[in-house]
Image 1 (cartoon, protein in one colour):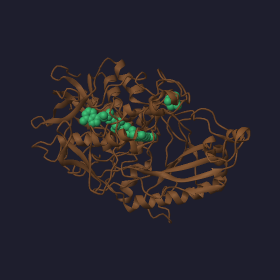
Image 2 (tube, rainbow, N blue to C red):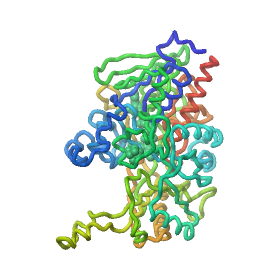
Image 3 (cartoon, rainbow, N blue to C red):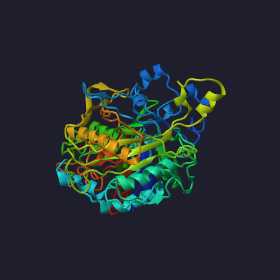
Image 4 (tube, rainbow, N blue to C red):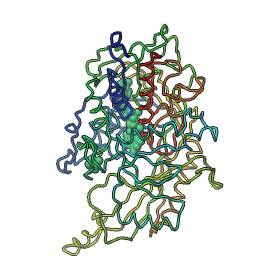
Length: 568
Ligand SMILES: Cc1cc2nc3c(=O)[nH]c(=O)nc-3n(C[C@H](O)[C@H](O)[C@H](O)COP(=O)(O)OP(=O)(O)OC[C@H]3O[C@@H](n4cnc5c(N)ncnc54)[C@H](O)[C@@H]3O)c2cc1C
Ligand code: SF4
């Protein structure tokens, strides 16, 4: 059994976002006394969601953007995502208060939350498993290093977290996109059924399925099925979408074993060369600037890919001059993101007598169909991409320039316009040593800590995959029956814009080439675990957060077994 006397806590978890929430839940439920340290502000679930269910006239500036404030204080966050506005600004990072650096001519957008719950409050909730092929990809084509774990080893942990998260979706039996433990899918619009039928006949290599999302269609304990109120980015007091606030943190609180400290930025981890372990976690209170330190038997870094890597780099010591647990020298390197953007947009005149009600908070999904199983002969890129879709009907606003007046004009404007079906491609990014983050040597933040800095560029592989996604979108839209198929944007997304940064403390079997072993445990420091996206050895083309959750739960199980056996 654990001894509680020598340490302030059994475990310290840094970060309360998607992975930190899971670590807090799992470790407290296994009986550990856990301190969660979160640099963001405290936020009460439900009551802290200011814009939820508010009509436009009750929202400051009708939810629109005060230009000067955004340019001055939120130049990055306001560019990254449409969901940053006056109803959600409270969740996001203030770029002026917490800046970062980029290399000359190499822009990088780093989207961050600054609140308890982290980005779980503002994420898009798309939730997919990596496939067996994803876990083999590096070993097969030689990019990056092989994953130290197979799909079969992580599959039970996917199932474990999925049942708690609550994922709506449809089983399809595809090898490239394994099915999850699903709740029933959300209903489809009439046009989507029409497109589905046509694609089955005219483009049988394409699967159109429900987007798999962490949004309930059936109640779970303490959480209600979605009532389609949207927009979700303002917060969800019914807990219908998965967030740390609604799901994992309440579970951890219920154990009575969690202490959560907001406004607490972790500055560094202290390494004790005698024991070979982390002895203390050094923290600065963001409000008072008071410095303090806490001790624990194990430390889980869940501060997001960049946040955790930054902490490891700041924890350099005589034993680890290039960053804690970095004897391999790969810390900060092999960073990945996904490229994203509209690949094509079709206009449809089918099902014109049908409309939809409410705000369904998810579209459909087209799983990867290129280079599945083997390289396609006509593909000039490795690996693949999937499309997230959006379906809508044009409304009265398209009639802005319509000529006319009186009853005739009003009648015309009341009629909805054609349907639009849009495809947004998300492509895989290869792990490359030159894509990296590091600590600025010249600039420090308001706490005196060096700024995180980025040096990241797309390679031809990502550029060619993106071009292919645009070309294939035309084929799909035509097969679907679009009367007009418009090509998507040509330019690449800015690195970071995919908001899936990962890979900077990758896992692997070889301690000379990786930071973590297959249990998310640092090769060099046995009481240190890192379970956010920094552990990722490759990126797949699907949204990654479900994989962080599954690995976090698995690492917690392993760590507690190790503790109980006296091995760490
Ligand atoms: C708009 C948007 C849409 C997205 N859509 C999707 C999607 O559809 N599907 C998907 O899979 N992913 C999506 N993502 C990405 C997803 O949000 C992240 O992958 C996920 O939140 C990562 O979890 P995490 O726990 O690693 O990091 P986070 O959720 O970012 O949590 C990290 C926490 O650590 C805290 N922290 C950082 N540094 C320190 C420090 N030094 N001391 C103390 N605390 C610290 C942060 O304040 C934060 O609360 C989206 C992200 C955004 C912003
Ligand atoms: S649409 Fe559903 S998930 Fe989104 S805020 Fe409303 S109830 Fe929550």
